Image 1 (cartoon, helix red, strand yellow):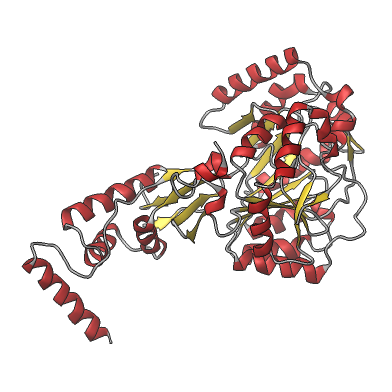
Image 2 (cartoon, rainbow over the protein chains, first blue to last red):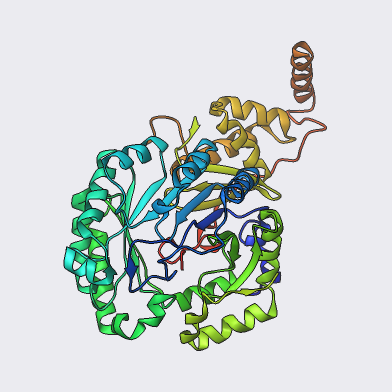
Length: 323
Length: 87
Length: 50
């Protein structure tokens, strides 16, 4: 079904029906203390042109004016951003739901208390193994003990704590134990799915990608664990890969905006297209661009090529401006 | 009657969008639903909402009252609003 | 102002009775609906940050 025919259906089913995004996924930085083999963002060092304080606050004010209900902050490692708490305080004082996605290594008791005071929707910690050696084999320079300790600090302070697990050949066999660990830590939920062939994961695809047989076992364990923890902890898994997601989003683009640290706005992760620049345009203008971009032949044709040749996903961080 | 924690409402051209951000559930409602939600946001009781809707709309009282009650029951079932003791 | 509102409200009630519970000059009622559109407009949390 194309976008035009969808317009005739129930209002609100299409992203075109909305005055503004419903959700902002904001990578506030690219700086990270780790060098994960599967990092979609290829994070590590800071970008030279990241938004400065005025630009960050100008954007924050627009989020409030457009009544965006929900914002998720990621990075890089978001807690390394010098304005991290100022950004969080601004969003929370504006009654916006806030999720933070972090490796957890900078969350000690004091930081957990500060986060608890801000009443985030949740904090999501990456745990890529049920033990230190597995986690650290994938998350180079990572410290599993610190990530686990962060979960404990957050749970103790009554912060909704979610755990995300990315399966690779290194760790896929530990998903069951990881879920048990998450429950023992008092997590609100666990998210997982297939590793995505983007960024550094695309470059390391040959050593990372699990076999079909490994995935089969993985999803069987997940199904069992989902039943086991029903009513006690949310076990959520996304059974499709990023290509399936892209196919679906070509028909139903999400009502969201993916903001890069330099203010550029990406159409969707797996594609290289950038539909606006917050340093030069308002969020309202960019939302119009976003709506048009999903009907742009160049975008549609390239997306179809990616679907046919998934290795093109490796191009997703080589941005192409279409505004 | 009050909105549950993590529930955000935004007016749109077609009515309202209701976003339960913890479960990441997005719902839409029409103009009538939007009017009812405006009262729920203010903590107005079901009886108060029904009276206001009966006054505002050109429809039989019984029909309006039933529709409002049913709508609020659906909102409660979907954990979007609470009467303080439903869950 | 408040008195005027009360009077108008009373008038509406009277009108309702006279017209068999039907009022005039008011908006047309449509049954309130609630539809879950989550999958259509919101990407799944696991896949979102790609």
